[in-house]
Length: 415
Ligand code: ATP
Ligand code: MG
Image (cartoon, rainbow, N blue to C red; front, side, top):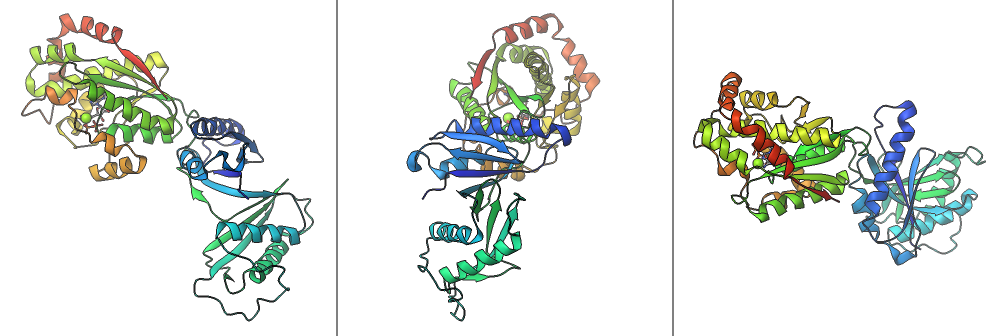
C-alpha cells in the first residue's frame, strides 16, 4: 500500500480573521504551481483548516521524495505529512490500520493475530522504538474519546511488535498521530516546510538581481514573506558576456522555484556607464551608477505594479555599502527600498544561499557590470550634495540615455 495523501500544515497567517480564506486560497495556488512541475496528478484542496494534496494516479504515478522536495519550497507551509487515509471505524479497526502503517513505514513485521496482553513481560530490544499515540478527534460525532483511542491503539501496537515498541509518553522518538475527521488520517512523520507566508498575499516588489551571492538570497527572503517578485538585471555588453547574463537567468529560475514566475528585465547599461565614466569623478563611479540603477529599477517597479525595491546590500560589506553610500543610493529611489540582508554577515548570507540552492550558481566566475568600471580607490564616505553635483555633469545626455536603456530592455518571463 502506498500512502497517496499529503496533509499540509500551515503556520503564521498574516492578518488573521476574514483574510484566512484568502491566505489559504493563495497557499493552495502555490502548492498547485509547485506540484505542476513534478510527475503525477494531484488534487489540492482545503478542508476545515487543513490543506490536502491527494494523488489521483496509480501508486507508481508519483515519487513521494520529489513531491516533498517541491512542497518544501512552498512558503507558508510548516509541515508536510504523507498520511495513511482510512475510513472512520471503531478503535479496534483503527489499531489494525496503525499496525499496517507502522509495519510499512518502519519496515517491521507484525505478529499475526496476537493475543491481547501477550507482549507483557517480553524484554525490550535495545533499539525498540519509543512511541506515544496522539489521537485528535476533530469529528465530534465519533463515539470514542481520544484517550481511549490512544490506549487501544497503543496496546495493540505493543502486542503486534513485542519487544520492538515501547511506550514513552514523556520523550518518545516517534509520535503516532491519529486524526479522526470525515476520514481517519494516520501519520508519524512531519517534514518541516519553509515557513513564511504564501507568495501573492503581500504585494509585489522589484528585485535588483545581480549575479552575486547576495541579491538572490535577498529576493528569497522577501518572497518568503508572501511578496511576489519581479527583477531587474543590468549588464554591459560587450564588457559583460552572454554567459554572465545566462547566470542571472539561471539564478532567477532558482528563486522562481520558491517565488513563482518572475518577470526579469535585462537592461543594457553600457552607454550609461560609459557616460558616467567619461564625465564624473572616478572615485564616485559606483555610487552614481547605483543611483541610476535604482531609478531604472523604480521605473520597472511602477510599470509592473510593484510597491518597493529589493537589494542585497549589507552595511559595510564593500565601499558602496557603507552607511554614507547607502544614504546616497537610497536617495535616488522614491519608493521604499527593502534590504533584508542589511545586518547579515557574509557567512550568514552564504549559509542561506547554500540552503536554498543558489550558491553554486552565484559563485560561477563571470564578470559583473559593476566590477568593470570600478575605481581603484572609491569613496567610502560619499556626501550626497557632492554626488548630486557630479551627476549634474550628465544633465545633457542622461535623459536620452535612460530612455534608450528602458526602451531597449529585454523582458524575460522566468517560470
Ligand atoms: P550581490 O552578491 O547581490 O551581487 P554584492 O555583494 O556584489 O551583491 P554590490 O555589487 O555592491 O554587492 O551590489 C549591491 C546590490 O546592488 C546587489 O545586491 C544588487 O541588489 C544590486 N546590484 C548590483 N549590481 C547589479 C546588477 N548588475 N544588476 C542588478 N542589480 C545589481
Ligand atoms: Mg554584485
